[in-house]
Length: 245
Image (cartoon, rainbow, N blue to C red; front, side, top):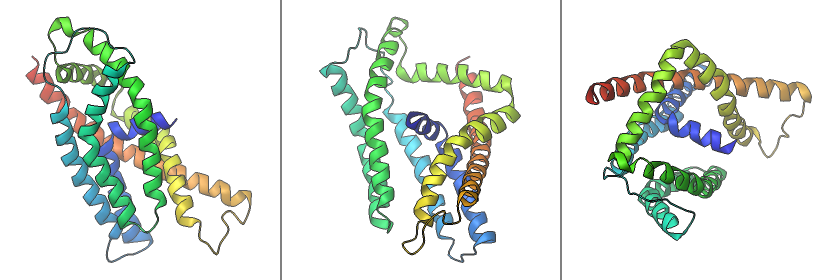
């Protein structure tokens, strides 16, 4: 489950960030007016950060011909994996520092550190499997970037055939919305768990209301983020489709 959530965030970073910005703006402008628009500003900073990070991350992709030979779970693979993650370390340290030093609740920083650790350990086995797949394509003289582009075109062609409505409502609202609602519920419990008030004191009815609200928020974020992701991926698909012809 954690792997699916992390994969969802990784593949829809910009869409989720924009969706969070929209939700934050509506919340601070309509529901609980805040003239400073603090959460909206944080979301705007997050959008800029993700845009810069994506540009930075694209440059880390190896554009040299793929190495030949099979990778096993040994020190060579671990060393290659550590070097790859080391390049990403400054960004992760920056995110953790912002969560730890700028927010009063340190739980968010600890939660991020725990998810990163889980992803780091689990990512090693996926990295080794991915390297074996890439080396099987070395005879074609492809680079990792070219392989990623071809895979993206193949996946996006499948999504285009399914259509925008199904992609946004089914994949974004129902499936992704359920996963996002788990994150929303965790954040919601941290916010609502005040020291002088016991959560869900009114019984099952309050619990059911909390679950419904979290799922609706997750579904809205999912649909909005997938609509934005569709626009971004369409532009990327058209650009790659022209360049690879």
